[in-house]
Image (cartoon, rainbow, N blue to C red; front, side, top):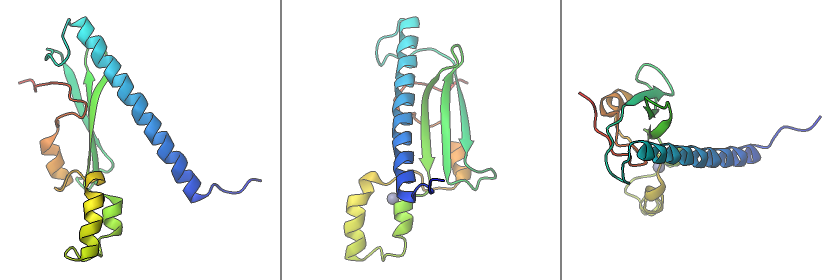
Length: 146
Ligand SMILES: [Zn+2]
């Protein structure tokens, strides 16, 4: 019987799958938006009057989640046109939480880490509910219906 997969190997495969999944999802969303532009005779970056259903989901219920996501699905086609992820935590920041924020070590680490930090929301998950739907990541122009 083969041995278990090493943690490092598992994480490398997980990262590769996540990267490819994101590329496929973004290509699909771009294709869906391009098809909508063709259907509605809209030029690039011209706003379209379309119905989009926004739905959000959390990793946990009860406003305790550290991760949230909202998706925008075009009502007519059922195709995903955009999404946005919000994270309250960053594992690299968590790993360095014991460093003194005024120390030179922390300041130097944060200078290199800040551009890649995955924490993009510093309020509670309950506060996340109030900001969604956010400005979507792919920049599909939209306005909420009334
Ligand atoms: Zn971070």
